[in-house]
Length: 157
Image 1: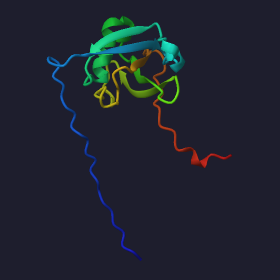
Image 2: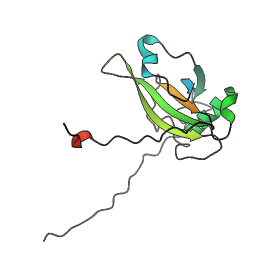
Image 3: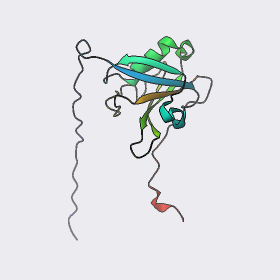
Image 4: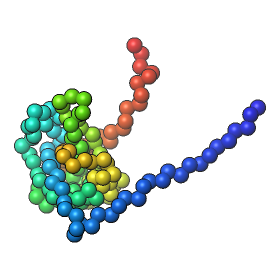
């Protein structure tokens, strides 16, 4: 019988360069908020965007918690404790003239969460993309925690 070996590998994340916000020009982040759902990717088709736009000047090291605070400043209904903010990046599909949406994290007003410290650069945001936020008030069900679908090899045909 052959010997069995195992090896422990430590995942090393590259150290993120800190941004000097005094010397670095901010980017324009176009944010689209809606209550209880994300806007449809079709709402972004043919040069159109949803009407519920919020423009934020920020940097690539901005966290989802920081962006949540900025949305709460201009939208008083979202300040209530227990309000969920479900973030998604909307980006152009390189293979077709449509847009795609990728969820990047959830924050909750008044609670700490695992996605709070994710930055725009960590979630691969690119300048020119949009940010779509589904806001769920505390009296409604929180957004479902989405899990990646398993590979569809085991589907019956």
